Structure formats: structure tokens, C-alpha cells
Image 1 (cartoon, rainbow, N blue to C red):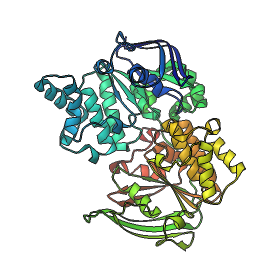
Image 2 (spheres, one colour; image 1 turned 90 degrees about the vertical axis):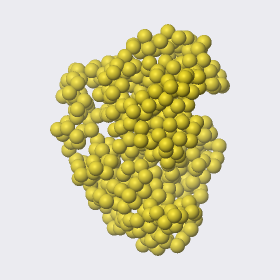
Image 3 (cartoon, rainbow, N blue to C red; image 1 turned 30 degrees about the horizontal axis):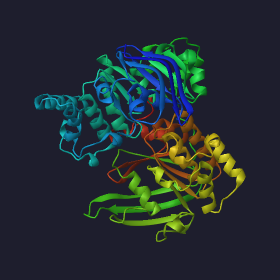
Image 4 (tube, rainbow, N blue to C red; image 1 turned 120 degrees about the vertical axis):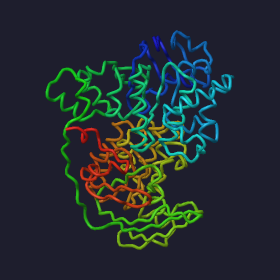
Length: 515
């Protein structure tokens, strides 16, 4: 038996946040854990790997066994030899400057002989495909390369099982494919896995069971091939369900066959053409050494939702920062920018902020108050859009009413991101630029974001959204732009671009792929 949990309770400062009466995972089984952000998924897995038990202020009661070891009595370093964990943010697991040193770090701390350390390093780097990166500085890695490096460091400990917490949340489609390819390999080799993942459409082929968590409780635990029996429950709680499974459910099928996970023919949605041109921009950005990072032009039409996709490092974030006027001073930028027929090319951030709003990928830097309500209201007030009715509407639309008095910095990652998004949307600017707003969000809140964006765009607001989430783009965006090497090289309706952009690292939703 991989995992045995009985009568587990976790409390923080006297508040009960997790209660699991019974939960078990067999040897060789692969289990997917789903649920809204803040439902207790990460809390559960961090009890199983011993982190909350031994390295936090949480009060943990009950019985947790991993391969027969009592987690309450077993040190973390011993648990790491039987169950390896890949965290949602791989940067939190980095301790060394080079890839090879990072992969060797775990075995070295086990005081293994040098020959065995190097054998494990070579083996794990080969499995994860990072042998060519061995001398690279970890700070220069892309998101996918970083994930594979940390996974290699976990595998170097040769654990019997793996816990993967949102392994694809912050990486581009190419990196996602690389990670899922590894998950497939582990699955084929019979390795036990516990996977937390919002991108269910791509992970479903590699799991045996689906476990749903709500408010710190396990409410669904079902074998994959009986998924249709609980489909309504999963949809109601905001779990991302591939459209071909919804189709199968509506046709009255009672059981999901393996071939059903391969997808079905896609039918494109209606896209808005938009009104007049609201933003016309051109940006050229070079490094201090003269390397060209961005050199491109774009136009956005009023009332449209525009997606910007491309591999990590293609220039997407740099373009947004150049338009907003918040680039690193070391970079040299030439920007021509007209918004709503006003030339703001030479204007500072104070003026640009009246026309453009920007949600950064590292959204925690935005928070300036000690409550969710104050945070959203601060941005409304700063831009002269203060309204108690609008405040209540925004809090409700982003599921923030129940945590309105909480400090944003103590919330879960998904909850913090929703606070940041709500704040940006409260500014009243003409064009909203969002950098990876869907990253790490469950499908319920990605849909909520999409619906809010759709509603606002119908009233004339324009959006430019950087994302790797192809299903979000397909469902909510009118236009898709793809960047490569600092230039926008594809531009059109999502269903058109998806069919030609594979070489650019843009993968379509799974339902496009197999007829």
C-alpha cells in the first residue's frame, strides 16, 4: 500500500482546514486530485510527504502511513527516499546554482559514495532529458527546463512514488508536453503517483482514479472509467471536463472507454470582430548588450479579447511591460503607442495607467493593503472609479465575498491571483493587459475570469491576455497572436492559428487533435 490515511485533521491557529476520514492509494496506482483553489489539495499532499507534520505550525492529528511508515514518526529526509514531491513553484525547491549541482544535492545529503551520486545524477538527468543542461545556471532555465531539473533532483533520491503538485501550472505548452511525457513514462513503469492538476483534459489518460476535494473534505473518489457517474458533480464544482466527455455524458453513455480520452472533432465558436482600433502600438526592446528582445507591432480592436501565446522567452511579458512603461531601466526601449486616439508614447506610468491596466505574472508585488476588500477598493479609488455597488459585484464575481476581510498575502496562490485580477479589473482602464492570469487557477475560476472578461469586453473594454491555456483561449478569446523571437508571427481566429502553430510551441485544446 502506497498511502493509508485515517481520521486526519489539520488545523491552523485553531481553525480546522482539512478533515479526511479515510483515503488510500494502492502500490502502482495513479490518482488525480482536483478541486477549487483553497479546497485543501496541497494541504493533503503536504501531510502525506511530512512537510506540514514536521516543518510547519499546523496542528496535524490522525494516522498517515506511506509504505507502512508512520509519517508522524518519520523524519522528512527519510520520507523523501520513498516519496518524492515536485512543488507547484519549482523555484522553492532550488538550492544550488547549476543544474548538475541541483540534481546531486539530494544524494549528497544522504552521504552516498561519490560513484553512486554520479550514477544517480546521470540516470535522473537522462530520464528527464536535461543532460545537455548540466552546466547551465538554474536562473537561466525556462519554466519547463526548471520543472524537469527539479523533477530530476527528486528522482535522484530514487523514491518509490511521486507527488506532483500542479506540475504544469507555470510552463508553456512545450514544457507541459515534456512533463506529461514523463508522467506517461512513470505510468507505464507502474510508479505510484499522486497528482494535483487543474489541466485535467491532458492528465486524465495517465491516471486510474479521480478524487475531488471541497472545503477540506474528499467528496468524490471514483475510478476514471466511471467518471460519467459523477460528471455533474465535477462540473458543478468547477472541475475542467474535456468536452468530449461532456458529449459522451449527454449521449447517455454510462462508462468511459479508454479511446474516449483521445478527443473528438472540434467545432469553432463565434468570434467578435470588434469595433474601431483602440490600441495601435510598436515596440523595440534591446538588452544592454544590444541583443534584440522584442521588435514587433500590434493593433487591438475595441471590445475584443486577444490572446498572446508563445514559448517561454519569446518576448510576451517584455512586450506588455514595454507598452505599460515599466521595463527594467537596463533595457533600451523604443515604443510608439496610441490608445483611444491619444498618443501616450512619451507619457509616464501615471498617465498610461488611465488608459492601460497591467496584471503582472508575479502578482504578489501588487498588494498594498491588509484586506481583500481594501485591496480592490484601493485600485478603484486610485483611478476615480470608487463605487460600493461595483465593489460588491467584483467581490461576488471573483468568489471573494467570503474572504473579503482576509489579508491577501495569507491566502492560497489561486485566491491571491483572483484578488489581483479583481483589483486590475476595478481600475476602469480602456485596455487590460494580463500576464498569465489563468496560471494555477482551477477551471471554475478560469471560466469565471473568462465570463467576466467576456462581459466587460461586450461593454467595450479591450483585453490582451498572455496565457498558455489553449482551452481558455478557444472558449473566451476572439483573436490569437503568437510570438516567436520577439515578433508576432501569427495572428487570427484561435481555430485558424491553432492548426498552424504547433511548430511555435502552441498546442490546441485536446478536442482539436483527434477527429
